[in-house]
Image 1 (cartoon, rainbow, N blue to C red):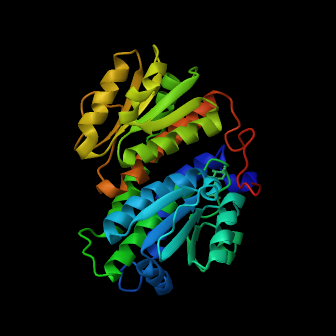
Image 2: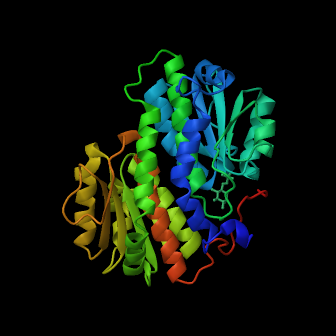
Length: 360
Ligand code: G6P
């Protein structure tokens, strides 16, 4: 297995570096001869026949699903619910008349998600699995499959599968919306190409991420991630990455929720990572940063070119506002990686965790 890792010290770092290639692979895999994006027409029909989409997932895949909800709602105009698979059964929502269930699962083997699939099949509703593993259980058992084309992901902490999930969700939403006669005012192939280059720029800035990790996370016992709108979803993923591999207690939450509790935890030197890639909420999130700084926090602001301000810690290259999660997550992955490395943690195989969880 050392051979597969090549010159990389860890699979996680290799998989982080593969992300620009994964974006290009997805563009290629879902393009027809005319250069247009396309997916299996049965899947397009299933999406467009549904009156509501139910996304079911766990862990990082759940975080990708939260981003995907925005794509389907904005582009297809269809309502979407996103559920944690282990919770779905307890209080099953009242279903719409024509639901489509979309399971997002890197491994295709997560028991909690499979249990929902089994139940939904019993009810006779159509199902789609978005997975990295062809022939996996959830792929075999669902009516339809969309593949992530991310290549095998070995590190327990998911990186390239997350960006692949978001990109494939964007492709599916765009193709379905176009087929349904909606106007899409951007060229997703072009925009994903820009994203691939932006990710490349981020993975080429490893020294910067390592310095941030050393500076902010070497000895801290906790860290917070805040964002608003889609940045909130990325902050959830940033916190999950950090806790999974560095064992630093980390929490991601909506900027507006600070005042409702978490701000009580801010002390001198508490690291707070703030995402500010969304124009409409940039002022508000920067306001949140001021609030935590006034209480002693050490802030890192991750913004986007065109809306950056002096003192921002990291500025991602400009990408389409819907696609910022694909890029803003990269520095968070790398900062977590270096935090774990410098805290002598087992990056690829964190304690107590498994790559695919086949028990409830
Ligand atoms: C495990 C992994 C996570 C993953 C989650 C869901 O907890 O450690 O990285 O996000 O399972 O896995 P899935 O294969 O269903 O995406």
